[in-house]
Length: 135
Image (cartoon, rainbow, N blue to C red; front, side, top):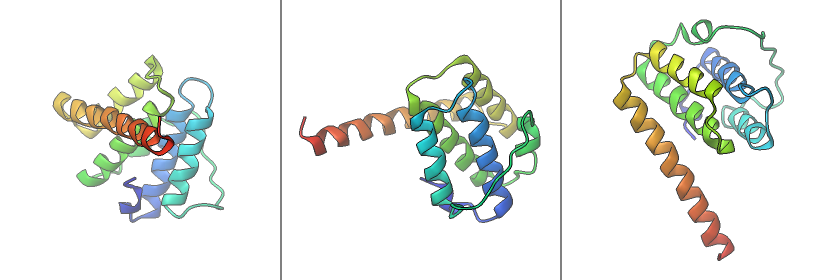
């Protein structure tokens, strides 16, 4: 949704690495999460390129070079959208989000604003599907 605002390859690769960690937080990547990962690559115009991500890399290593607040906001919003994609906000995902919140220096209020926005977006998507399918 907002990844097209990322300008550097380093930011794009860092986001993809982070997204893969999040999608695999519960031990597997489900179909919705896989769809999100593919759409992330398409939005950042990175389809067809090979990416090797080192397993076990710490979140702090991935996001340590992020200084731009807008980039941090993009990462956080998109990661929350990914986390809520499967309808399950499990303990491993919560740990990741709280660690990102800490690393980015976000307040509880900022976290709640992003989370509430993601929940509203999900409801709007469901409403749109119902309108389209005339349910």
